[in-house]
Length: 348
Image 1 (tube, rainbow, N blue to C red):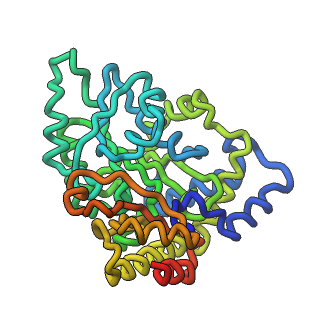
Image 2 (image 1 turned 45 degrees about the vertical axis):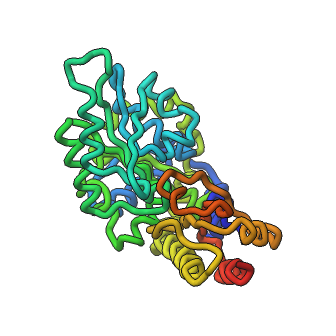
């Protein structure tokens, strides 16, 4: 009953086998191998246009390099207050961007609203040098609250960014989970809605260590080659990242894995809805659940071997909680079995 994080899951057997296959023989280094080039073409096919692809090792590196590519003196990057770039990346985005600053914005369900974003951008008039200047907007899909922006919501935020002449970055650590939840295509959830650059995550969805930066305008990719090298993210044997993505995309495996983890989260959610000791804090749109649970029930589950994290509750959630309740987070993965879920719910 491991629901702490999808980072706890291993690698899918097909992806692990492709790593074994790539380990034999010789191949050009630093992204020049046939396999690297094949996977880059696959990304272009998936997104229905020519894209520039940069393999990196971690989501933090992808996010930080994406924002660094938009760097401006006194740069201000607008994000949700709970965004991974703001809460969980040890100031790496600011460090990589040589002193840019994140501007956190509140919003329910982990989402930015167009009005809140426009108001935050408006706090930095272009002729007021002391405040710095707007640099970029970044959103997370699926969000840190387990919700997913609709296509219209992405387009609305993109319109606000465009009016301010700001690029839009999407942190897609759980990109596939949001995609299958919406029933959208990769193109519809990104560049067709105004996204300029994407951190494409595979690690949380069955890969071993595979992340990629996707630039939807290859003409703006030249500086990224240098940014990636300077940040020590240019892998000499990058074919091992390419090998993971090669298996990940084959026969739609990546979408099947995301559908499975989402289905396991939905099964958990149905169990919580039927429980008298726990309830969903809000509906989910991915493989993450946030649950308000009685403290004695939480301890009983942990005593029976269930693994999950307690989670800080914001003001709105706290207002609906009793003194003997805690907010917890549960995350399913491609490796979650239905018996894991049923055992958990039985214990609950």
